Image (cartoon, rainbow, N blue to C red; front, top):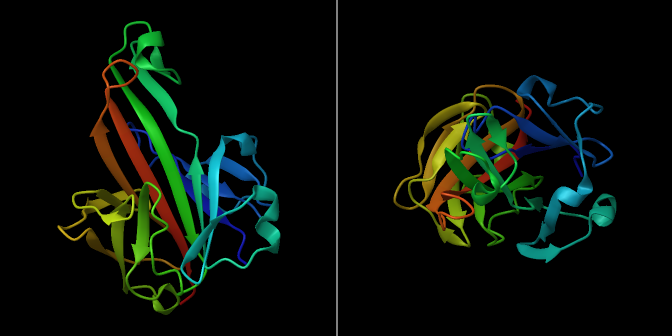
Length: 219
């Protein structure tokens, strides 16, 4: 199993500015895109931030423990982080809900997830929140080709999700939840999607779901 895993930090401001990833020891880190292959940083993310971890094998998903990862055969791994509130204020953006902030300008609940695809067999959504699924075979995608993906929300195709390739926003998913993403470089790819919903207006103004799918291009 390949062991480098990139996650998306799905905040409304600078949505694609930061990257999270897991090193060869499955430790999680936070940084910028140019740091994606580092195995040691000062910004190590605690495992306690992980809410759920799923292993997808033969299109069957199973919730697993973090400690079990090195022993598993997974066609894909899907990780959900614990939701977190953020509020923009005149004093900066705070990691608190709206009713706890002084002079809140805008507030959102961030719900983040990531999938790392290892096999062409990962063809179905796990069905938990926002998710990206390949419609073509990742192992056959090279530089200059297009990754054909479908965006799902709780197992249902989602239209008008915002899509980015790396840090560059490329458009929205179509009525069937589909989008084609042109691959421009070799190495680990980072295709991202985000989707917003209105919230209760008390703890946050909106809910921002964000997810990423990672796969490796070798040619």
